[in-house]
Length: 317
Image 1 (cartoon, rainbow, N blue to C red):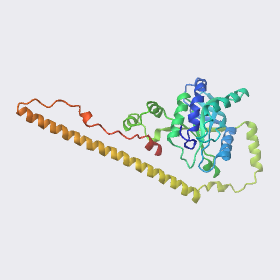
Image 2: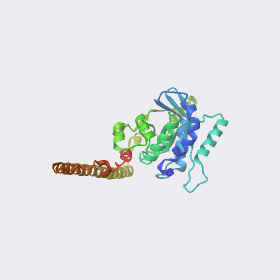
Image 3: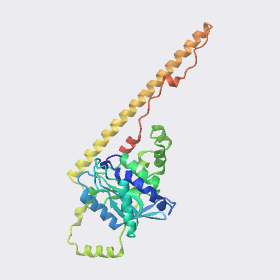
Image 4: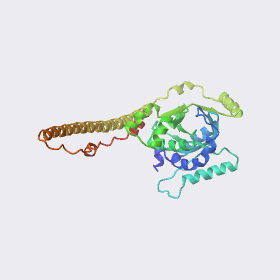
């Protein structure tokens, strides 16, 4: 299992706990999820989790609970994963989730697994660990989503919460575990159609809506135009730095792929030259009345180079 920082904690443990609950949630609807409805309390609990445990680029994660109604996924509760290190061998994530859901069931709270959430640092959440985690969830519970919370954008005045799912094409490729260039080309997968974003609606009770209206009337903040000024030199500089890092990684990946293409081309030339030499030798032997050279498996003599996996470049893109 990858480290928690990479975003695999919820997915790694979630698959084991979700497997038992997934059938109950999946059986309620056959249609794909077209909308995610989140209770306001869940949003506040996610924000509170990051404020208490997330520092700098530290990632926080947790489990989403709720139910499926037609093509709408309703998220009514959540609970966080406690922070722990890889050296903490006594902590069992699956057991922790099962105990939490059992406790929630005892107090008559929705306890069906419907996905997981994770914070992000300047939008750098698209990783192999997140892909593996979401695949585990979606494979066990068809309607599962991952909620991505961006605390930096939220702190600047605009709540940033997005729901993602893996596309059916990518789910098929992940099942086969073949990320070669040929497999991705056959499945027609590019970086644009790896994930699908599901619209989010935040719902509050009528009493909470009334309270918010009352608080808005009492608010002393008059100059609201400041919310439009979201950029700052610090924020812009960090975003550009991370973008340049991704461009460098993409450039290195392209160099590896170009090297592979050159090796393939070079080997094809060598194979063609070898076949021509054998053909000329057979013509000469035939003119001398000798038997032709024995047949050989040319693929054993010229083993094709192994193509580099293309998943990392797709994730970077």
